Image: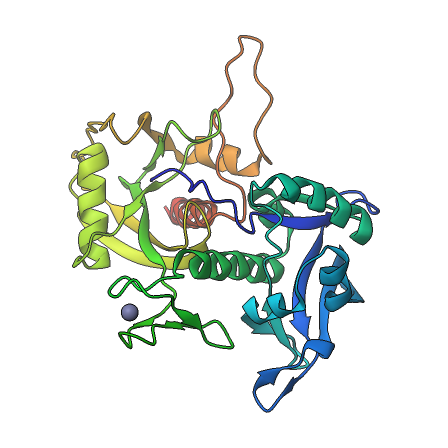
Length: 337
Ligand SMILES: [Zn+2]
């Protein structure tokens, strides 16, 4: 996987200082639209306080906030549609450009934190604190805002592109090229030999964490071809069969569509050759080892000798889902035996 891009646009969301460990997310939404144009007077910030499953909404005038921080109300036009509520209110996200490294950015950030009585936290951390629905909303917002930021100009004519109202595309008036937001497909594969599963570490992983094998799909490949190639490249195994499991949008390092699969090798063809250019290590783990690791929450404390026992990606990650599915399948088949 390539490293995270330097631009930390919309990397932060806002979490609530007032209620310990209950994050608050700020999303700019217009209360209504007239004749397809966005009415500025209706724009508000949706202040979601997550206290168990109960949502509490506090509405603040976005225009007032923008004015207070010396930003043009026209900025509202830069917002993008990210979804809608059960009451069919459209939800828009707006980048307040506080994360940019201009000298005034950090000053504005702390002023905004005190104005909104919240604190900015890293998006990656926020995603793990939110429920699935909110996490998906925030991750869509960040992906879409980042895409718009990186597609300001036409790749063919070099002329500026214009966003449509919803933010679902950008158009170049000069060359008539239309650009749509994109995701990069990534395959993530849990290989099993019938009794054990193969887990690996990339050097960028947190210490002690192992996960399923993953890699970007190449242009022109099918998912099946990508899975077979990635497994062969990373650990030198030839797959006997593979099966689709689930998919997930993932914001890091860039907008990815994670496609999760189970795969099997033939018993007796389990010797791995770790590609050290891509992986730090890869090992076979038994059902007992994996089942025990699944029960642990978060990174374990280091042992007396300083070593960190092996642990697995958290619940929100699709790798966790794959590993859990494998454990369930193995447990039920060993019960039948
Ligand atoms: Zn153009």
